[in-house]
Length: 312
Image 1 (cartoon, one colour):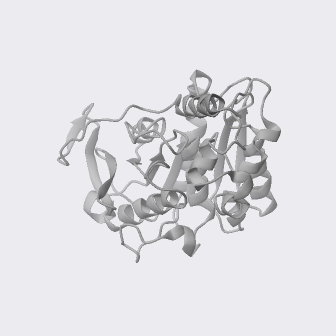
Image 2 (tube, helix red, strand yellow):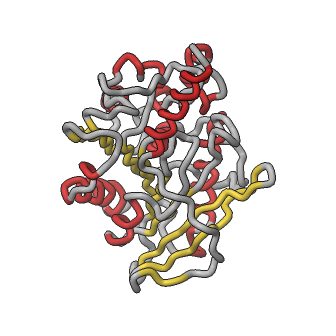
Image 3 (tube, helix red, strand yellow):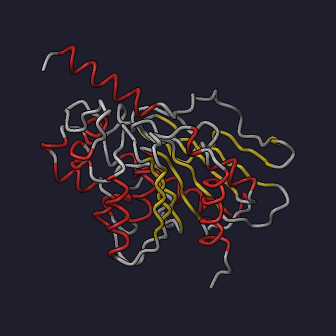
């Protein structure tokens, strides 16, 4: 394949996976400020410091709600782009429903290869638990949501609890758990090796290519690094004790085939993990088809059932 073709594939990959990415926000002081007189916002809190760089998160606290559960948003962007922004779809939904919410940054694949990304996500969870009393939310009831690459990472959070290789030591707080009690995975990938075989006809992405987002994530062509692909697959770690899942995907997704969510759904069901798969007909990779009252209600009700019910 020519150099031009490789460049074109890489460009298409970035465009496809970054269509939902929120532009980076300028750094702001950590002091809180009021949003719509309903939410107190803390921006750019450092949860870890790695290789000379700060890993940051934003925290949103609904006023007048005592000790609410916490929802954590993980952004997409093909693991190579994106930013915590304003918390994607989850933060406005969550704060309106009375949840504390966090939106996190993590190292992108141009900075570090897998498992750095999940190490960072787990570090953020540990930091959030360690600081729950300070900010006033319930560290025992934490849900996670993400889209695309973020969907992949929240699925890993939901299934890989206790795996030492994926836990890492980023940011410390190792006395805290990085587990989550509910997962909303929006059009995230699972088994990278099966993506090309189940792509929709209009897809231009070639996931088996050495410059695909998945190959860049693991640091080499996925066809030549199958053990690392398995390490990055949330299905590898599923057991009956995993958190409940809500999986949402478009039937005509040109970037992440819907087959990826079918695989995860089937694997969770096989281990008797509570899971619901919602397929949006004729929808692609994110977009307006997912911004409906039906889906918004589905997400909020899922977290309400999983996190707001009386604790045992």
